[in-house]
Image (cartoon, rainbow, N blue to C red; front, side, top):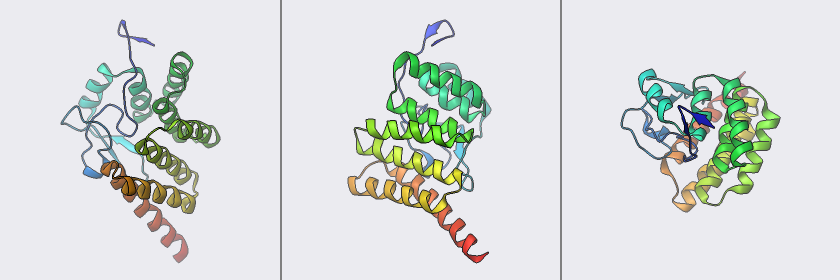
Length: 193
């Protein structure tokens, strides 16, 4: 895709697509390029939210194509994010990160079946333990948003166990722990009702 008169490249990691550190240590799950965070994960909904619009705008101005999928979704510009993500896949192929970013957008649009398809394709492409755990965490997020809390809990637990066994990304393990805790809270609350 062309943006700002230049061809944007594809270089990012799932979870923290633009390499920015979150306000909370359990949410810093990617490479770190800027010290001021602009987003956080809501512990109740497990949705990412913008907390610093100026930093978001700065990230948006320099973002690669793949980063833009996540950034547009973060800004709730879901139709634009979906169209852009599909265009990136059409021009660059179905890369692991792109598939998961587009799946995340589709989850927010409640297009769960299609999101599951992209997640399955990403899981098949996973080459490292961190990629496998990231895909499992993404699947857990979809199940969580679908209301399949028990299944989401299993996916988050598998993700965290795989991370801990391999000494992988501790920040992703912490994020999975946050998700596990939320699922457990919801299961207890539903059992008490």
